[in-house]
Image (cartoon, rainbow, N blue to C red; front, side, top):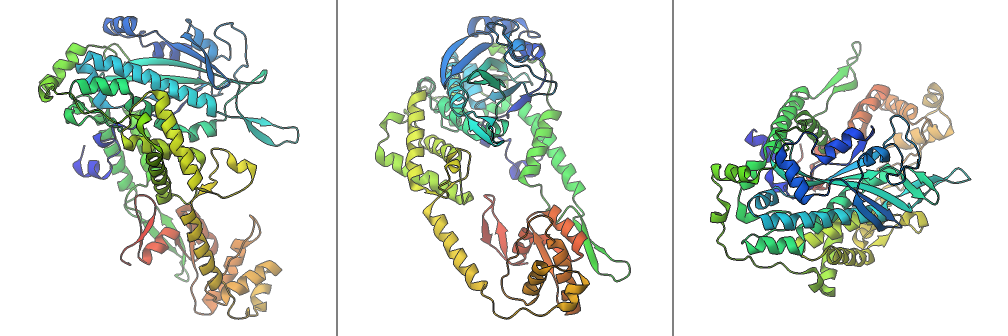
Amino acid sequence: MPTAWASRYPTWRRGRIGVMRGHIVKVTTGGRSLEEYLKGCNQAGQGLEAYLGEHSDGLRFHRYADGTKCSSKRLRDGGLEMLLDGRDPDSGELLKSFRAGNVRAYEIPLNDSKDLDVASVVYGDVREARMKAQARGEEAVRRFLAERLTVRLRCGDGRRRWVRPDEVMFVSATHFTSRAGDPELHRHLELINRVRVGDEWYSIDSSRLFGMYENIRSVYETTVYGDAGLCDAMAAHGMTLDMQGRVPELGNASDVFSKRRDAINARMAELVDEWRAAHADGMRRVRDPGTGDVVGMVGYGTVAEPDERTLMRLRLQAWADTRQAKGRWNTRVDYGAWNEELRAAGYDIPAMLDGAAADPRPRAVGFGADAVRRCAVAAVAALRETNSAWSLEQLEVAAYDQVRLTGATGTRDELKALAEGIRDRARELCVMLSEDPRARAGWVKSLTCRAVVECEDELKGRLAARGVEETANPRLDDLAERYTLDAGQREAVETICKGDPLAVVEGAAGAGKTHMLNAVNDYCRENGKRLVIATPTQKAALVAGEEVGTGTGTLMRLLEAYGWRKRVSNCLCMGSSD
């Protein structure tokens, strides 16, 4: 992979090995092929079958009622196929059938650190402790989802309301290798898209599920990396595991088992180069052949690098382009061969460690009220850096991030209690933006802090002072007649054309705002002035340029012309003017 690209786009480099890879995937087909894939034995070699027989219990079926686990057992053969057909795997009863194309389940891959893969290959006790930590992490995710999932129901008056389901079902499986054949101990969690409310079965509100992905990541990683048993097993061999999943004593040994990552990075570099080549020409002005006036803009804008959304799209494409089918060659579990692979690459792990036990990390139960308060203040400050308002779910993610920054270890319940304590204390530091009961839903951005409110009040005062009318509106009878402006459009045109520092025009879709701007543009041409339109997006700028026939650009481009620059966190800071 080109070094320059890797340093500029480090998302898939080792610096973020602790971040849960993958994303929530919609399952829209029947269950037999998925069941065989999750079992992992249909095309595997004898090594994996033997290991599964010794350490795994096949596919597990979990049923939760009122947010509490009521059963967890091995799923019968063909059980996943029954679930994805809308049937109960125990009784065979039809719950609610799926139509063609319906989402039948949501697959949630649960991954952790590549450094832990190295430690698990070398030390069997670490491997066992890690599998137990992953099981606790998966259970924490299942419980979190069982408590937070919602269903949208239509009321008698036609409105929709959100309710918590009474029963939720999951299927889980453990896998041991990546698609490149490297050791990668991870789990697959299938959330069945049939949940019970009362006596009826419904589909999950998918928008809320996808919105909770960061919460799922935070819950899983905090539970695994903070697991006291795993940390103690690592410390016994002289290794320290931080809350990002890094093990500094192992150096770059995880690179040996990163063939899949390297393939994705290489493909990603190719896709970014292709994107740059396609966008090299930037924006071009389109002029009227007769008058020479600029009537619009074409092209891709002046941005020389892909934005975050484009990078995500390219990354998913790179992931899909390099995805290999599961087969005998890449499902073989051979810890002896993997240890030989490490030694051949120059990594003799036992020799690299001095044998002394590492210092223990602090326990979650030892955090007092002062420590919780400091973490709560830090959580709110972190949100304020990139947001003016946030939801309770975002506040919860920030609280879990603070737990990880402390390096605390403990049981699943101890870590959860610490995170919830920080979240509740941080909630007390926030200001509620609305008293509407609907604003209290976990996903609504209804929270902010006092500093943001004070900044907003100051901005309101400045805008109000600038918005004071300094002169009377000019009489534009000819222009109003020429463009057949109604009373509201005429007032808006006259207010804008008189040149006060600030004028605000509001209008619903179809009210004639663009028609009004055409009249303003005509007035500017006749009076030696120039109209410039700034829009939130480049697409809107192109449309405005075509319909009004004047200079257009994005708000960010206008701000940059006056010296403002956007940081990585999407905040603006002063730079040098162009």
